[in-house]
Length: 393
Ligand SMILES: [Zn+2]
Image 1 (spheres, rainbow, N blue to C red):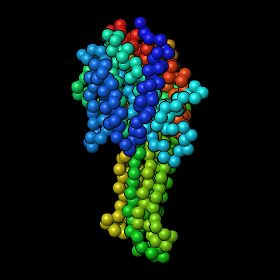
Image 2 (spheres, rainbow, N blue to C red):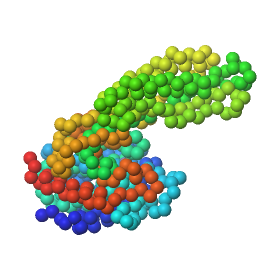
Image 3 (tube, helix red, strand yellow):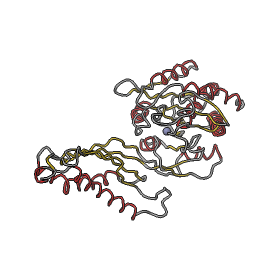
Image 4 (tube, rainbow, N blue to C red):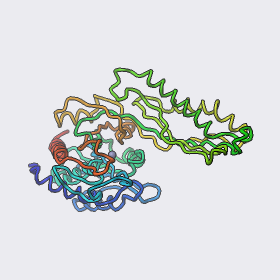
């Protein structure tokens, strides 16, 4: 017998309170939270495996409830949250509070609420004698570009039967999301040669060089826009190149030596980001760097890829989509323009969807919240998943 929703909700709220209490802003360690979760699962008789980052201060957690000789359904969530710096909170960010049918706190919506639901229903999963396993994949450093999940995916691929479906519980208002764009972030340092601005021939202007690069990016962006397929379901219906930050120069009368730009792409699934990058690099090689190097050999342009979060390609035949539709009665799947870890799972051969409580509108903001009704819907969903996993083949 499955438990009444009210009993489940009591345990979910306790677990949300427990998880929100850890300040797991991405710059901090998440180990206190992860070790607490590991201990909680151990008390239920559930083994889990941690996959640490290089510094040993952060970890992903992987756990399986049910048979270990076959792949099951993954409930996946990140444990890190975005900073509260500079935000005007009227609630205490790292303490759960409830008012007007909403749970407040950093991470309630994005996405400790979902993780708490998975954990709070773990005792039922253990008691259910599952025929298809349910896995937990809890990660670090999602908010700085889906960084942590890659180590966990490598671990799964190397050591465990391949999961049949991954549900990434990012906030979608419990709408089924089967596709999203990818994100790349690059940093480029342009090094020129300083000198008195009264004699440009004595130097090389890093800001002029940057502006040519940025102008070219704008041109590439216009081309992507012009080539958009009107049938494409994404908003906007094309990939994007944009430059978001620029910093350079010291005074109006000094030829600027350094200019740093941060730029990036929002890529449709199937778009070749490497090819776009190669076009921009080719422009730099032809039109920007020679002028700098002519002034001084050490001058030039250096670009590094800082974030590469992989798009989720729409696949309406995906077993993950079928499962969520079957359990919920939903007929449609949607696409969103924010990135998640689902793309990385899919790229490694694990069918993935995004499906979770709360709205992305409330994510990353002051007084972040998730509606109680959203948490209830997701609790009901995980309850159905458990019932299904008891008897499914
Ligand atoms: Zn998130």
